[in-house]
Length: 72
Image (cartoon, rainbow, N blue to C red):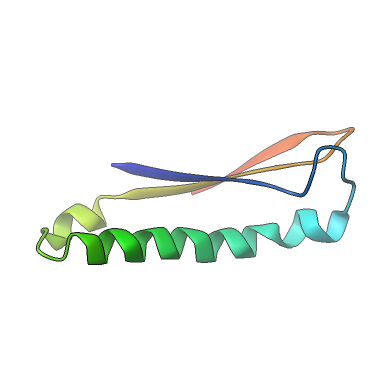
């Protein structure tokens, strides 16, 4: 099972290096909240299924040099 979160650094065309380099921190909290919601929504599910879950964050940023970073 895979879970993915897409994050963009502000509106299209924004050139803010500080946001581009720190937005992945907010994504970690977002992914943790998704895992928390899943775990408490299915409290009687087997915990081994939760351990098999793959979590990804796709970070899109830049204007002139658009880049995508995949955090796994």
